[in-house]
Length: 83
Image (cartoon, rainbow, N blue to C red):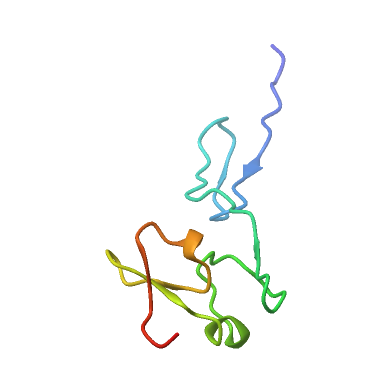
């Protein structure tokens, strides 16, 4: 009888090891990094706010209150008074 060789697989997310295929977790999908057009910083957060961007905030979403420098970045934008 031939002895089958078991391949050990290790999950890159949690470090768990198994010889059974398909039994590794990967609880999150990698997200593309966001590059801020104001400061050039790379971030996993698409809502990154840097000092140069904060100086240009002109709009606020009527529904959620999120602020933006661009009207097209909000779903229901309203110009901030005095901005």
